[in-house]
Image (cartoon, rainbow, N blue to C red; front, side):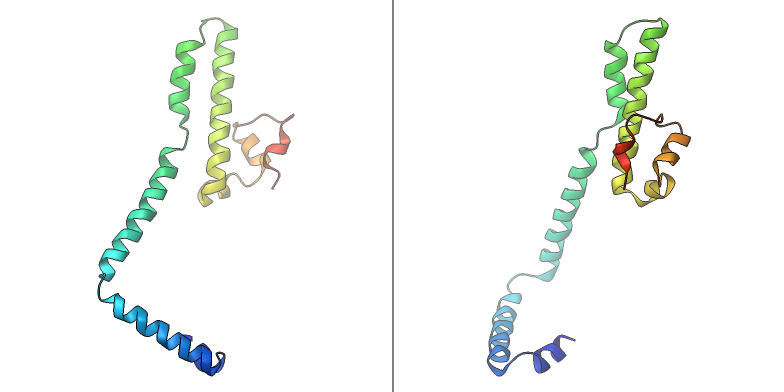
Length: 130
């Protein structure tokens, strides 16, 4: 495909310029081993993925803080803790829905999230209208 583009699309001057650039790159290709470049690329890609993974907020950590700071054994304290945990789970579902195809298939619409008990109906229906 590349050869076809070079021979058919490029003019004589462009072909000569391409050949000189290719010879120049070939001269320096032997100085840096391909395994080093590939290893560097894989390392960079993994670091970016790991950074995304570790920046994902886990509801467990939030619930530990909530359970330690929202006091009360009565119905009001229990409902506050429960509501906060439901919001944390909903935010996790919304985040995972945007990055995971498996979660996107499980929760295709707002109704799927409501049926699973992760969200109540109104007033925040504007959250996932895509």
